[in-house]
Image (cartoon, rainbow, N blue to C red; front, top):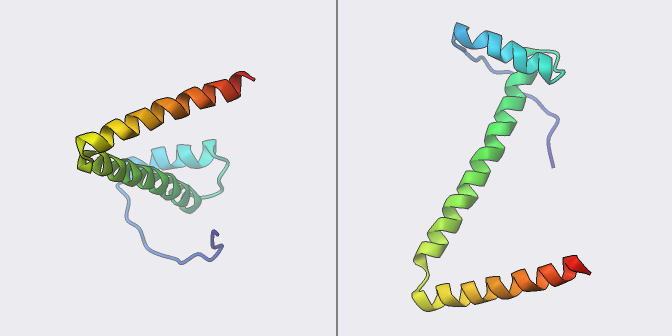
Length: 89
């Protein structure tokens, strides 16, 4: 659930970044730089969360024993074939 409460903060941005920030605001239909920064932060957070999941997945697979990797490969192959038969129907 996303909160609609906002907290005012002070943010310093390199002057060279302001035109890019204005483009984001304009192309996204946002009314202010603050809204643009909030959208940029939301996008960054989603990317960060995905990278976190990716890192955890890599760590999980690196921790598996050879037998576990083979079992995973077999299940993946089975599931892929099952999915194809369902999608083809």
